[in-house]
Length: 332
Image (cartoon, rainbow, N blue to C red):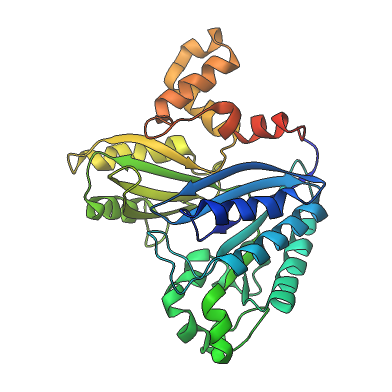
């Protein structure tokens, strides 16, 4: 893979197709980068875009997308299952293919300052871009949600890194909310559907699994919710480092914990794209010793089957596996 910058912004709109398409138009209008995937969720009222290419081009596309979302999404009326604090809730920049982390850090800083200065949107820097440790984790920045943002901004320790620093001009801020920007590593957004509508069971399983409060798995964030899109409860997770806690580990752990509630996982939803290594690991586990006699494509198919990646909605490898999508647009 050639050195690339990837961007995976999350926008607080999953129903209005016109708004989603306007954001898409803003991204694809920038040369030097390619739109890889769009993943809307009506119940979460959220859409995840993925694009990659030349670092400066990706940063420019991110700015135009944030500007478009700020104009078209009114947070005063936005409702959805997913936690959020702004029209562009979070905008991570991810180095791929050996791109130096310093490049992603520099561009994230520049993007944050530009969004704050030119768009008057409060910006919090997170993950590797965070100025202090307590702002590193997205859930900490987002705690209180959009509804608590005005009060949070009154606290000295929660002044934004860029943009309006006080909520006195709340009229404009109330429309856009705030945005979280930063450089981070590849993250896998992975939701496991359960054969129950009981969000409490999903929340209990999430509490046992997630890293915080001495949960079972490191580098894992998890919540439980009811997802109307699939009419079931889900354990919704971010795998912060799939090399430490992989989808295979998450699936096996969730399945074991769910059994105590008399519940069975019915399938997994990958939000955005997933690295090939995650699927190959699951395929190897499914095939065991038989893997020596199978092709790479067969191992991928076995991994999809083991994780039930197509259990709740279609999973086409050429559309959902990161390396394959990059190859399809000529970036790999």
